[in-house]
Length: 112
Image (cartoon, rainbow, N blue to C red):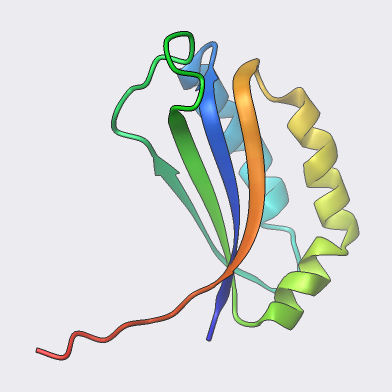
């Protein structure tokens, strides 16, 4: 059973295009240096929420996939993760909050 480390971005960046450009082109290459990481996914909200009207709107979820919980723990204790955390201070302005959550992934087959 694989695991994922989720980073949930609630709210909105002041400039969504600039934020996403920085995230994909600068931050994710740092994430890819984490030991044992298998895949990276970015889920963008399709609602186009307005952070001023509703600061809890979901902007995106970044999903970092690992084969095992041990692999995730190695990555979270790595110097490469420290670099990623330091880089998060360079993100373009974001109004809202970021939450981090480790989850087990349960693959559910189609039994039809």
